[in-house]
Each structure stands twice: as structure tokens, then as C-alpha cells.
Amino acid sequence: MNPFSSLREYERFVYTLQQQFPSITRSTLVVIQRGRQYAELSGELIFTEEYRLLIYERLTWDDGPLTIEGYSYEAWHGSEKLHWYDSQPHPGDPTLASSDPHHKHIPPDIKHHRIPAPEMSFTQPNLPFLIHEIEDISGPETTASIN
Image 1 (cartoon, rainbow, N blue to C red):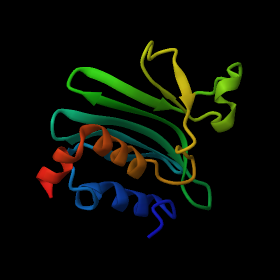
Image 2: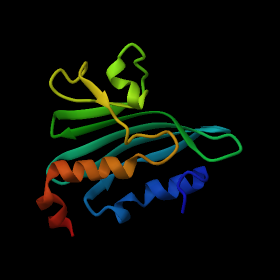
Image 3: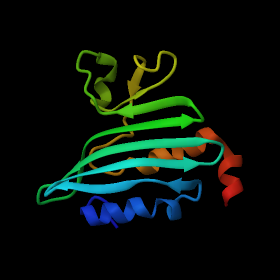
Image 4: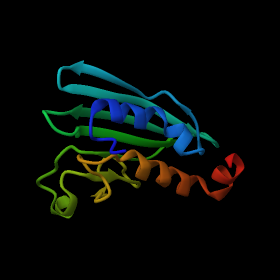
């Protein structure tokens, strides 16, 4: 299955994430078609130990496969924002050029401290990478207790 082959395939991919990743305890993700060639994915994935991933994607397609037009992904532990990814271009920042416009905001000074995010893409799903990243942060005991 290529999740980006159609909106229907992407919906199937999104709505089966809990089956693919047992570390996800709950999902509020919804894909809503907003126009003939435009949809949005929004909601959150909840993991054990109060880890959460807030997700927003703008999806478009012409006569071909889906693409992510823009996104925001926020990782949280309880009330603490751990980091976030977004696709807002920062052409004046040469340190981000290698993965422009994809970048990650990290502490300290999470709003202004950005690093390249070559793992992010507009042409393939970002969610598996993000889920694995939460699993790595939360530690082996979190995913092991679920399996």
C-alpha cells in the first residue's frame, strides 16, 4: 500500500495507525476533505506515560498522488512541549538550508532554536518517523508494557 496514492489510501493509513503501532493508546486523528483537491489531517496520538503527538497536515492532490502542502507536529510530555516540527520557510537562516523548509524546534529557547529536519517530507508520510521518535523518547518500558 502506498498511503500517498490517494486520499482514500491515506485515510486507511491514518485510521489504522493504532494497529500498526501498539505504543499508541488512543488516536483522535481525523482526515477531513475541505475541497475537491484539498484535505486536512488533525488531532493527536496519545501514548502511555502522558506522551502525546499533536498533528496537523494540509494535504493536496491534482490528478496524481497526495502531497503534504504544510504541517505542524508537536511532541508533548504532560504539559511540557518537548519539540515541534513545521514547514514554515526561514530563508534567512543558513543553518536550515540543508532541509529547507523542514526543521525542528528544540530546547533551549524552543521558539527560536531550530535545526534541520531531513526526515520530514512533503511526498511521503511523516507519521511513522514521528511515532518512532516518541517511542524512543518515552523509553523501552513504555512500548514493552504494551506489547
